[in-house]
Image 1 (tube, rainbow, N blue to C red):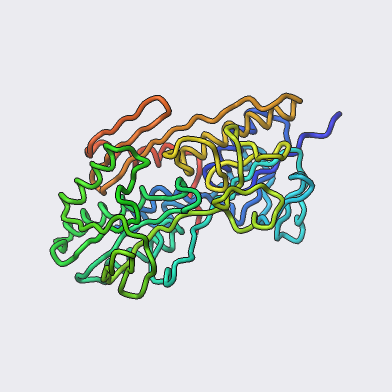
Image 2 (cartoon, helix red, strand yellow):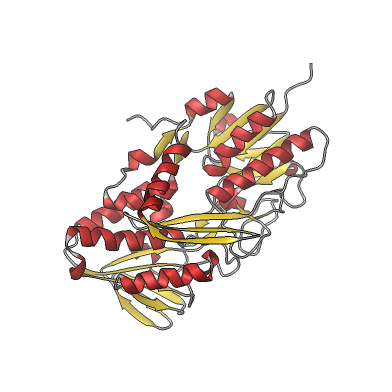
Length: 385
């Protein structure tokens, strides 16, 4: 009897979990291994609700071990440190599993924020995780008034590598929360961005809708000026300074640190270079999905969550084809689905390569975003303790 085909998946986010499910469906007899620092999945889209007490950190932390057992996946507790042998060996910091051999590899280790701006330690980045979201909440509850500056940046060498949506949600949610607290008049909110039309990837109508919503909520804007630095109480741009008692900022993204110096091909923006089938350029049976990769597509194409799922599904199908001696054939669908939440309403944006749709803010979309979280996570238990 032939040895089972060995497939390694690196990471524990959207792309990794979806990839494992799809691989097991495609290859019921394969030997699947997941490599990740923790056997946990963090539902990052709901971090926007943590600062306002609508979610706790534990609400977003899920135990993936039951799913791995159900799918018959071997778990290696480790961080990836590199690859060799044209991708057939994955290196980790686990002494007992420092070299993991495979017949196919799916990289889904996510990206990292670019932390090069001087004084960036003076800003809090929401999507760095639960601890950051909780820290924002603690700061907000300790403030009686003042100026809060909110903004996001990008990767100049890879314009799609940004997370602007969560910052719009955090900003509108903050305005809603302050009004409910009866404290809005004591605060000045300022949104800053180097682009004159922030959120353009959501579409022209969405940009107008976002800017109109800022005006309606009396949120000041500082747009079209390159960000130079942060100090404890100041955001400095080429267009002037923004005094601030609290700075909330989402930097642009680049690829994970471990790929630097590896044989993996990198894009100008520092991501793993891949094609429209999620294949890593120049490597056999090595695929990437989610924030770790750079993919061809329209300039509005997102990188995380739903898009990561679509890329992982295509990767799994192509891995199955490759292991059967067939060429890759599955192209991932390019699709943007975003609900910009305001704590009590939500504006939905949809884009595909053939059409686009914008639904104005309505209460139903807020509940839809919450429903999707529950539906997506329904098969995973929360981490105990």
